[in-house]
Image 1 (cartoon, rainbow, N blue to C red):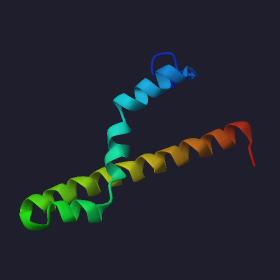
Image 2 (image 1 turned 90 degrees about the vertical axis):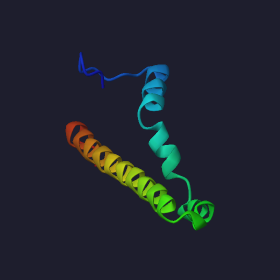
Image 3 (image 1 turned 180 degrees about the horizontal axis):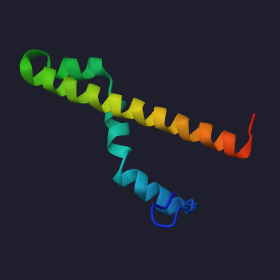
Image 4 (image 1 turned 180 degrees about the vertical axis):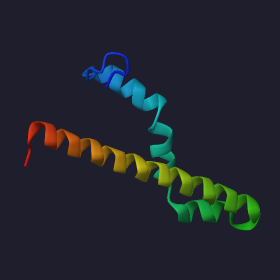
Length: 83
C-alpha cells in the first residue's frame, strides 16, 4: 500500500524493489540452518554465540512479520467477506 495515497501498489517492479530493500535480507538470513552456523563457529566461543543470537533475532523478526501479514489477511477477509 502506498503510504502517501493509501492505494494498493500493483506494479510487480515496485513491489519487488520494496521487498529487496526491506525484508529480503532478513528472509535470506533466516533460511540459513542453525546447525551449519554452529559448525562454522564451533571453536570460536562467544563469537559463535553472538552470531547465533543475531540469527535468532532475525528469525523472530520474520515470525512477527508473518503474524502481521495474518492480521492483514484477516482484515481483507472481513472487508470482502471471504469465507
